[in-house]
Image (cartoon, rainbow, N blue to C red; front, side, top):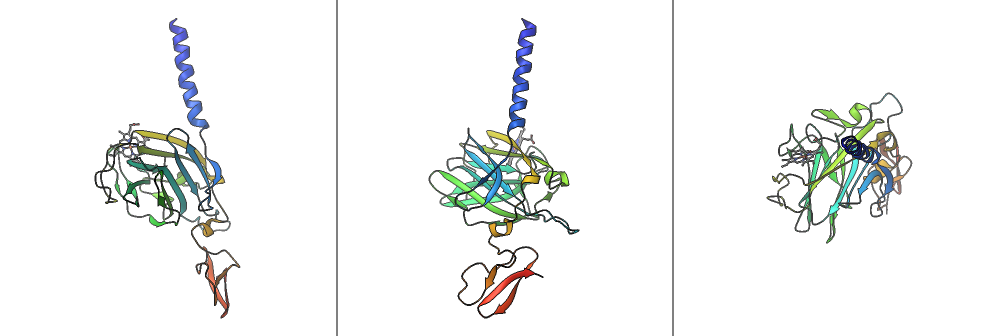
Length: 249
Ligand code: HEM
């Protein structure tokens, strides 16, 4: 009797381990932004996390230190959090919650299991598809200076390695002062993880995702209404009054 209970318990633990390990990121494209991410949608709490990085460096230049990510959660949640280091302590964290019709979003950090505080270092640019409607809140952002942080780094320093991604939420308690990005809040009551193979999370389209033009694309000229910004390593070169083009410097 005891041994069959023990076997059942081991099996249960075993199954849970398999379950966690099996939860891994897959490719998907956000239909609003057109950005194609590696990510995961939690079928139970209806949270989606996506992340995408620029191409790996091919030469001797160091890898770029940025990524684009999105957090989509039910609008009814008090707050939702993302840990790109997979832990609570010494990781790069983000929090998002609604305030009237606004999306309040910012990076956080903590040394332990205590209230994480706003974290300076990341340069955050919110992307256009960030929004709040009656059902969902969505934070879509470019994070520069974000592949390393105090106490850790994405893929433990290998941007084609493995990264455990964690997401948490408090599904019913609003933060104390929702108008303030630095507000305190009560602990999460939801938490889950997925595995991300970073080697699959680099996109040649990365710079277009935050609004830049790629090599040989137009970046200016009379009547040009598109982006005038060129992607990484490119300069907008004047050709004529009617045409400027993104070229390698
Ligand atoms: C008042 C704020 C918070 C408190 C008091 C708190 C407390 C805790 C505690 C006690 C644990 C360990 C126990 C457990 O596994 O349930 C934990 C785990 C965790 N927390 Fe928090 N937390 C807070 C906010 C946050 C935020 C804002 C994030 C991310 C944005 C976060 C991410 C995590 C993660 C990923 C874990 C599991 C992994 C690990 O143990 O490192 N927490 N938290």
